[in-house]
Image (cartoon, rainbow, N blue to C red):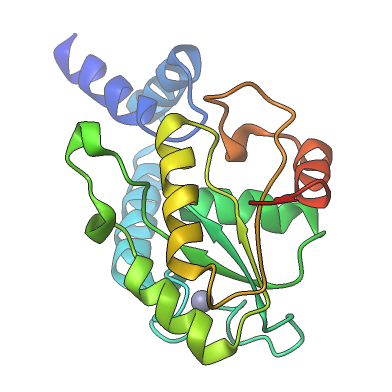
Length: 195
Ligand SMILES: [Zn+2]
């Protein structure tokens, strides 16, 4: 059935959802009581309208600063640079990291025509200067594009920041931060090395 396939392929786009799970979600949607589905649709619409990027780190917020940027208990002179909000959340879940974040919104990928202006590097330089940052932890995923991006961040910031480090991966190249378990990710953060 085409409508069914279409719904399955929409669920497949969600992080961590495989073909079997997408099919179960689609079956649920097809069979669930009317009230549950309208509740789901309303919640989806509400979150799409409510969530705006944080003006500082570009994580999710409800319009103003996000919870992390507005928390003055966080260490203000360390920034962990991630590709997307899912990776931020994965690192946050470890409870190990107490500094701030910066969400790049992707990586530099010449093959896909994505140059250094396609991600939020200008904003990263600005924050680094404003906060007088001591350490930048580059926590982009270990891919060729991730390495290019890490090297470029180093060139941009090495004269402004004392330490630029890259998290140590216990996973093969091409792994994804938000699929790592909390312990592996904590080790990756602890084992970060200077680049
Ligand atoms: Zn923020």
